[in-house]
Image 1 (tube, rainbow, N blue to C red):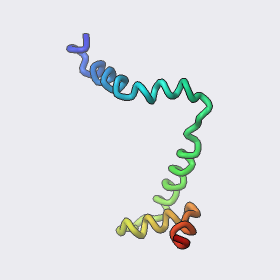
Image 2: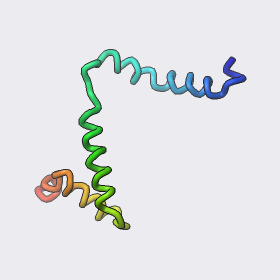
Image 3: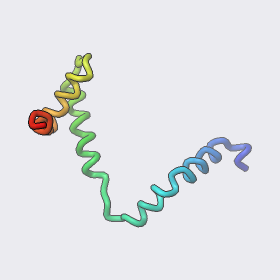
Image 4: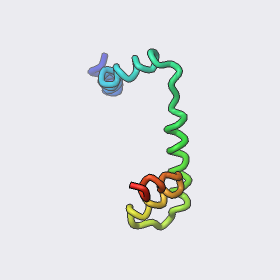
Length: 76
């Protein structure tokens, strides 16, 4: 059946490759990707604010300032 359906073959390979991650979901049911999504949301906001930043280092610095992490760089 997979010979006629390359999408099914691809799904099978993906499930096999991500098996440990899929099983971990059921082992750690109370974990959340909320903190990661919060960070991603901040970066999306910054991306909108930073229109025109051609220099990645400037974008990175602005990201750290926006997320409140600039203190880590200034003190180390």
